[in-house]
Image (cartoon, rainbow, N blue to C red):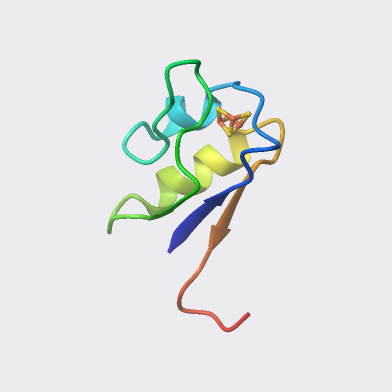
Length: 68
Ligand code: F3S
């Protein structure tokens, strides 16, 4: 599972980081600092929660297992 961030859409709500700081690191102005990241095993639920919690819907979860 990977996360993909639309950094144009990020407005610095930092809800993703609150849900999963291991995955959604913030830059020094509080915007999400990653563009894409592989989610470590066991952190998939956190990654999904962070994506769902983003009010701007800036984060997509990409499954490597499923076609499309
Ligand atoms: Fe940005 Fe959404 Fe996180 S606006 S800092 S990606 S909660």
